[in-house]
Image 1 (spheres, helix red, strand yellow):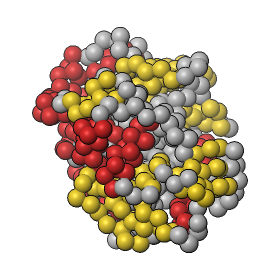
Image 2: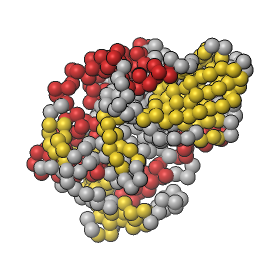
Image 3: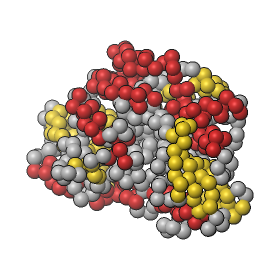
Image 4: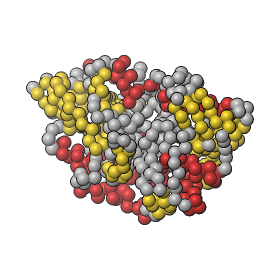
Length: 477
């Protein structure tokens, strides 16, 4: 008996509920257009549901990433998420307000949060259900969730309070076997490990038909086949919807067609969802819509090595602290800010948690070690040693890097303030969050009263429109 099944994926929406700026890869440079919004996503989902039996999955990084998400600890999204009607999700930044908050939200969701690799430290029990068996017509489908494995390793401590995380590598084969014993026709892995990690994991485990990957914001226009497993990932910020249309014969896949669908501005908005989105955002529109400055450069995070958005943040920090150097994490999320007026909402999109600016003192050798650790966590040869986002953002230094080199040997030359770094010299450093400069590096760490968003507002007010070019902080040789 032949059957049709559609599987839809969104990943890493980072709480972007409505139409927003997005960058697109074009022939010679990046282009910037409007995209996304749950009302448009819902229209696409409803269209697929009208044609074939359809499952919809969310890979996580869902309830964190905007001012509104931080202000409500993600609860403003609850009606929107339930209206979509997802079938399951997993998580990463979603524990940004503490695991207990995510557990409470999970109790109010109409679908399960799944993770085979999140454990209660005290009892050793799984925090969430490991899998869900879904029935679609005559088909029995097992869905296994894998949360991000870096939550207790590189994220702030409160993200993993009371929990520990594994990669899921040792657990996955057992759950695949368990689902096969329950005679499921199809096994789907819903993962937030990252695209390189998922490709390696799928090469190690048999029995998975489809892996829906998240975390690394890959825009996969084609299925990557790893043995018998089809792997996809579908961008970020809700700007894309991934669609797999399966043809099955007696429960076995005969054909898969894949689309990476841009959620473009011309897609009609679903009326019911549009109302829910407006209800979620309306309390904050007046405050966040206020103009706080101007930029003459497009500010974006489209590059792995250096970006205008993070340079703007670091310029504002250095303007306040006057330290030798400034660092921030290489965050992937945060949509572009176009030339023209800058609103308070857009500053919070750069760094929604608005942490205090911190300062410390590091020696030259510690700065090299800091960079080497970050280079390994970003570009490690073994995907499971990749623990970061993009390359750590920096201001005040120039480094020459060999990315293909082994761990600890990638920094070829480092200059600070125009002079080659002196290993035992002490340099003043400012940063935001523990991901900028972990406490194990340096001394005299302290938080200032000034927070990141206020520093950016002050910078724009006192320096005028932002118009600085990239500095060539990192040279890849």
